Amino acid sequence: MTVGNGRRNGQKAEVESPVALTRRARKIHRLLAERYPDAHCELDFTSPLELLVATVLSAQTTDKRVNLTTPELFAKYPSAAAYAGADRAEMEEILRPLGFFRAKTDSLLKLGARLVEEHDGEVPKKLEQLVKLPGVGRKTANVVLGNAFGVPGITVDTHFGRLARRFGWTASEDPVKVETEIAALFPKKDWTMLSHRLIFHGRRTCHAAKAACGACPVSALCPSFGIGETDPVKAAKLLRDSAFTAVSA
Image 1 (tube, one colour):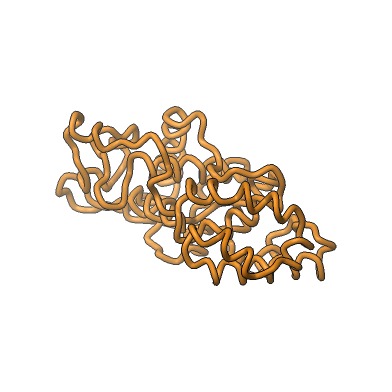
Image 2 (cartoon, helix red, strand yellow):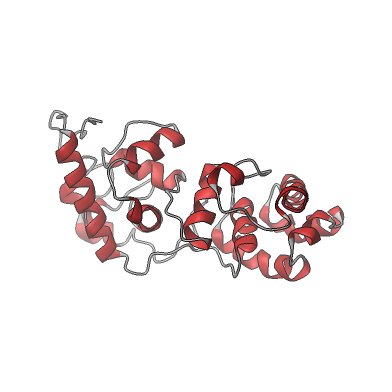
């Protein structure tokens, strides 16, 4: 794969060799690891089922909102069978603060039923089985695999995709293609933490609307430097300490 490394300070875009791209990508990852040594999944969970449910619920809302809602949900529905047999109205009331609560209730009812019918109430540990569950796509499946089962996976949410394109690692908007192209740049063992670090960086520094370029640890390696605030003092004011203002996708 050869990806153009974009423009920087008005210079003409150049084309990187696969080797140069890989080296630059891995250096960016090392710098992000230094910047975010505590990067992790920001959804609260204590079991694979809880993480699966929380990730399904995180679409179009914030992690903070999900984390405020799930304690009551998890207490009331401790198993897949409990979700399968839940009263729709009661569950809708719990999920109402999340938005799209009727659709999310429908997903959880169907998810619980499918887990009971096909997996003895347990969350499967294989990607091909997870993506067949109601409301579960590759993003959700990789979150569960990486964080509940320790199986490396790349989570292409809106933050990850945005940064991968800004870094010049891919030019694709298609999440599956992004996942495939980025996977080729990094050792499999790094995939889960790479996902966490890019998502942390996207939520805290490299914002969609106005990136804090002047306060970015990878600015010297980023072909998109200058799309946001470049003044270090002004950029520092754009930094966020929490992911909870960012909408999950």
